[in-house]
Image (spheres, rainbow, N blue to C red):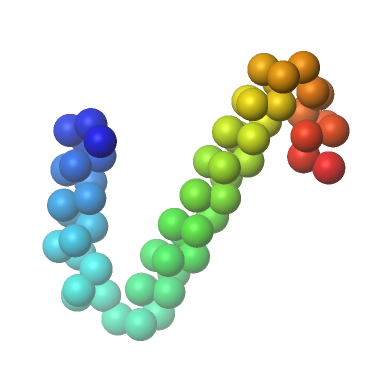
Length: 59
């Protein structure tokens, strides 16, 4: 984990306890979307390295 990721994680730990339920759910939904997007990008990158077009890889 680089220094920016550590700072971001620290800031998140400060913010999360003061969120109400709706804000907490929105944050979790956003984080889940970001994780899914990152996994899709990684899957596409692996497929491209293996010679599979991104269209076939995401189908």
